[in-house]
Length: 122
Image (cartoon, rainbow, N blue to C red; front, side, top):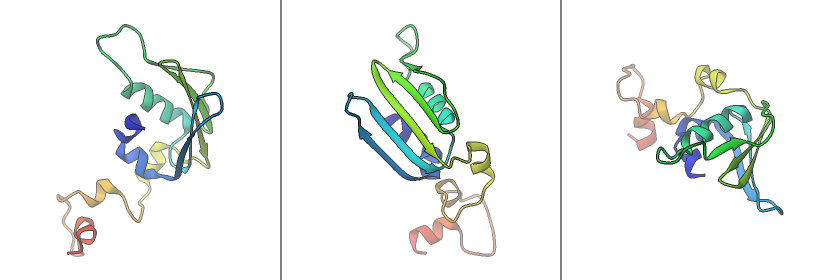
């Protein structure tokens, strides 16, 4: 989850994000909307790296699709499942009622209140 936390935009785009420990000591991560499972697997593999070690610490454990993917991270299986995914590209172009990136952008000037002003109650 720490690797996912490094992807704030990815995390905030998911609804109903949940995870649990499987009976076989694997971890299951599931969400609604948001990115495809293959996109999350690729993002996780990027974050789980150690430049001092040869080879990847996270490797695919089977085929990845828009709905499901599995990663072996240092011997621990992570099963990713996206229910009704829309993909990262579509998420970036879709305006949402609440997006952290927009809320913290102080460079945009409009006649209405800034999202960060709404966030802070100003």
